[in-house]
Length: 544
Image 1 (cartoon, helix red, strand yellow):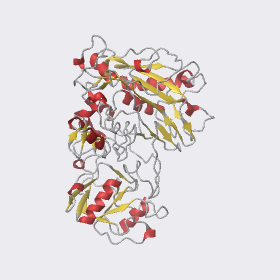
Image 2 (cartoon, rainbow, N blue to C red):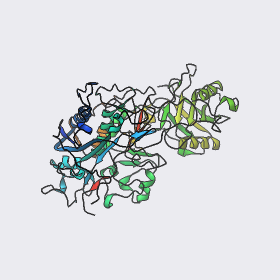
Image 3 (cartoon, rainbow, N blue to C red):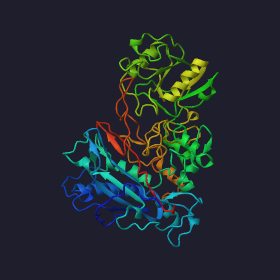
Image 4 (cartoon, rainbow, N blue to C red):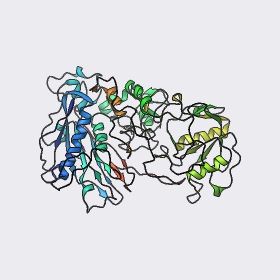
């Protein structure tokens, strides 16, 4: 048995639980008097939240999240959430928002299963499930849901009260407690709580992504569905733990579950770019899932694709200061983001205008840092730009340039389901977050940031989310959750809001970006992005 890391100490005041929905989600207030959920500071009701004290408004948001999740899932066993609103890290550069995750996992051969619960209730033998899901199979709680020990609950949640302290310097970050999604520049607490509860309900890989080792040498349910595009194998079929670890940083990890595959085509936008042929480098011949489109881009055709050979712009950067681009007539141009030096870069609009003036039919810009393409669509106003302007990752951009250097490469720009989806492949698999540099708490256990419309369970909480559970629900259905509608449809599938560039603005061709943190947000608060991780430590219920 492995104890929960960072277990909370001190006296806890447990108030009456609040239950909601087809699955009963029980929010247990674990805060002391006059603190956290019991903070008596007077406030005015806001955004359909009727609370008149700060603590009451916080609890109302948690209750709303419980209602949303409880009305979506089916379980005869209550789902217990030990909940804290307490001071956490905060400084002028940003703040920890909070965290939540499962405190227990169970398997069919677990000797700590409660009396009367047979291991046969688990759909897959010798496989780890989070306790809330295991209890739904058993029809009875697997943990008591009482007392002050976090290990007695299905989920532990801790959120930061310091964001409400007018004397704290959290880079301007502040909670919004309304339930109406009108958060403006504030951080929408309900969205963040929905995300974190999702981890506690099972949106989490229990395999160590840095080593590929299973917990106590038995797979978790995620291993049956994580699909490595390069090898064409799921994690459960990989004999070498190191192969799973390599897959976790491959930028090619997908969710291969039937419910997700059915939901992706009605949830995510179609990918606009594919490579049709490459005379010397067949590895680049594919559709591209990790791609974004500039706000100022010309229209992406839905028929009559723009099909042409790819050509690298003569300066490779496309900045006016580097000289005029050689003719690109009838070609799809490739340029790099930024410039040859920190002071020699230029805006995305300038690159696009110069490529268009050189005769290009379209432009692909390669990111200049590892990882996904820019997290938001490159902004700018340029009504004179009529060609499509797309972004690819640095890895894929360099591979495309090497392929062009080695021979002829032909590609197409067209919005076509045969290309796959933004954040999903041609088979409808959803793309998991697997950047080439491992990010603790973020890698694997989230959707990829290339998903568009933006998804709740990305490692970043985008400001345009609308309290939709989107692809979270079909993934939970894949791992075994029964749904309140019987699984015949997925709540809010395909209803994501269009992105109007609500992330941190990127006006130039170089620099920029966000550093990751533990459930943190980085300022400025305007168009906020919350970088999230999950509570990564769970108590193994089977004795070691």
